[in-house]
Length: 328
Image 1 (cartoon, one colour):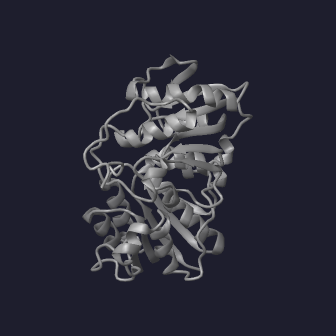
Image 2: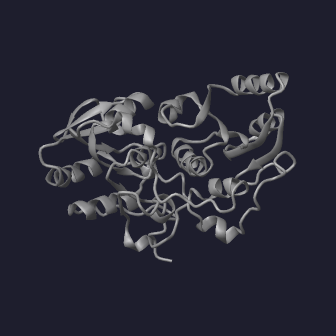
């Protein structure tokens, strides 16, 4: 039996993916004692997962005080493992915790994380699926550990109710991954045909986000879910999920919701595990290319993918500079 401390400190989607890798390890090693530190904002996602001691934090100060208390009370871990997390604060936290092994899944700070897996060569790293780094970190502990076939968190079944709605979630932290009001207007008739008798609900974090104000929009209800708990409540009522490649999609997938995801800059094969109930929609012209233009304000790739899927032609908008859709 090992006593393992795990830190996952990243954006929503990467946090869910890294936890899924950890869940594979948990299933293979039920006797290990796993302490998991995650941001308190994400705690509702994992609160009902069995087999973990959860340590939520709201600030670095709170996290480092907890680590110092472990040291002061002679708590020792066999392993300190960072599955996701960047910056010197992460290295300092790991160094503070007494441990026999320290592992960083992304092979950062080798002076602290002396037991990390070797980094892949540059070509392999750019082609790897998103769960791969977390799996590499865990495979230091169990070389035979097998990658999960899907995202699925059993604890989220608590939120699943009799389906009453179909959910569209258009928003993202990046404009280049966001569905515009025009995109959603094109999607709604087809979604209504696919799901007769179910209410259509557009979810945003806050009213007015990306132009979606709480109330009615093109025959659908716009609702602001506000926080993670509110999001889980809404997804729990849904029969299906429509959106783009965002962290919220990963929660929908982990709830086993059938999904249709519109991809623009990112590649579906990196995001969707083989057994997920997800239909990926992306322009064939993009092939397997990835767009690194994070400043893109006109995601023509997503707009055209939506229009093609819905059978409603989009205006001929010029592609931005450095767009993969431009002739080489």
